[in-house]
Structures are given as C-alpha cells and as structure tokens.
Image 1 (cartoon, rainbow, N blue to C red):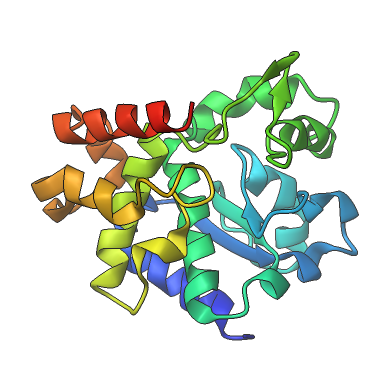
Image 2 (cartoon, rainbow, N blue to C red):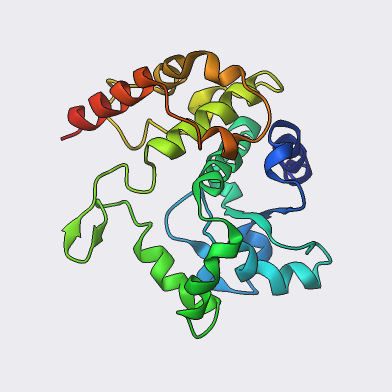
Amino acid sequence: MEDWLPKSDELIRKIAADDLVGRGCYIVNFSEVEAYEPRLRGGRVAGWTSPIMDLILADWLTKQRRWTGRGFATILHADLLPRWMDYAGAVLHEFGHYLTLPPHEDCDEIVNRSQTVIGWLPLQWAERKHEPPPVSMGVQLPRWHDHEADFVRACCHLAYRAQHSVYIRPEHLRFIGPYHSCIVHEDHFMQALGEELEQTGSIREILQTPTPELFVRLWKYAIEANQ
C-alpha cells in the first residue's frame, strides 16, 4: 500500500496530463495529516476534495517539501480502500470532481468568506454528508448531489483512459452506483458518450463542448428513475 501514492500520482499524470499543466497533484492519506489537522477527516467517505483543498493542505505540504503550487488535492482513507483498483478508483473519482470545480482563480471569494482556510471545513462537510440524504437550507438534496451530469461525464473519460492504461474498471470509480438506482450503470453512460471518449487532450476542455444527446437523455432517465 505504501507505493499506491506515487503509483496513483503517475496514473493521473498519464491519463490527464493536459489538465495538470503547471499544476500540482497532491494525493494524501488521512493518516499522514491526522496529527496536523484532525478536522480533515471529511466524514464517512473514502475520499474527498474541494475547490481549495490544495490551500487547506499547503502549509503541511510545504513542510513535507511537496508543495509546488496550486493544483489538485485529495484526502483518502486508505483503510477503506483495501485493493489497488479501489484506491486508484477513489483518486480518479475525486479528480472527476476537480475537473468540474471552479478554476483556482475563481476561489478567492470562497477563501475571503472564511476567517481562515481551515475555518471553511465545516461548510464543506455540511455539503458532503450523504447519509441520510443531505439537507441544505432546509431542503433535502437528491442522492446525486455533487455528482451531477458534468461530473459523470468527466468520470467516463477518466475511466475510459484508465482502463486502457491499467486494470481499472469503470465501477471502481463509483460515480453512478452509490447515487442512483441499479437501473443504470457506469458502462451505460460511457456507451452514451460514444466516440467522444476517443478524444484526447484536456478533459476539462471537452466538458465545455455540447454534451451528446444520448447522454443527456440517459441522465434524465436516471434522475426520473430515482424520484
């Protein structure tokens, strides 16, 4: 397990190099940072990220001589991910979130609304608790909250590229199963994207192009099936 960190970093840089140009990549096990900041536990999840996770970890990463500037950062609970494919799948799942988050330059307002970066953590947790279904401003949020169509689309691309590099199946990314009924699966959404998956380059840029109609219809079907 000790080599999973560099191995997963290598995987991300191999399949999404264009989305990390000039950016850092920080994959951190909670056991590494627990003493630094216990509140980084992130609830009952295998992994989590946020628009400013890199800033939250910046001081610790600097002390570890790992900080190279703004970029993707995620915290994982390795004890919940016993196999390499589960661990790698969790990393790719969180990177899927990163690809749909606001650009770093747009996060200044988020930071400014907090007295400290660490002080923003309770707000983040309030938006990520999924058991029972989350509630925001008194309104119950759907099971797929934070796992919307753009996130699913990003994960489809990551899964497609990963399975052509190493033995990782789409279900290892868990971008459909926990949030939707068993009527739809990861493979269904990948098939709905069709030839789009063969595109290379920046996934973030691909997400800015029109979504294939079949994917849109499948997403609407999945939402209706869960209501």
